[in-house]
Image (cartoon, rainbow, N blue to C red; front, top):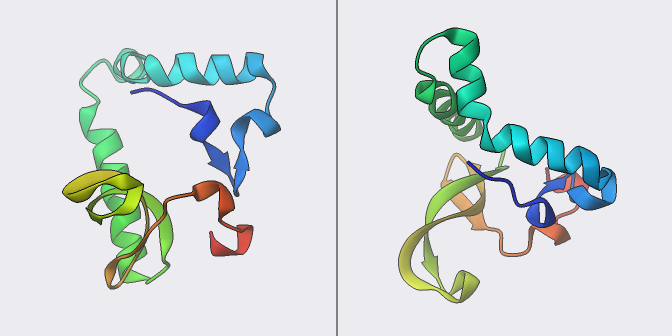
Length: 113
């Protein structure tokens, strides 16, 4: 796991604009070591937690047609300069599956979330 702060947003605002560099460094460190932290707390494996949380969010987005922005593997047809491949990208997920592939998430307005 890794975190790219310059590409991470909260309600459309880049993380470096919201938090001081020291706080971001702590978040990056916890992200990198997150699995070990969970295993230490649970005293057993943890791989299923992240996967089950992601599946739950995706299922909710589809069932409620929320068009929620989530990372998902989507078929690219020119987005990100790629064509004819499936790749993990930010998408709006709803009843019709991937409704839109989001190429520039910094331009998404808060109301779209």
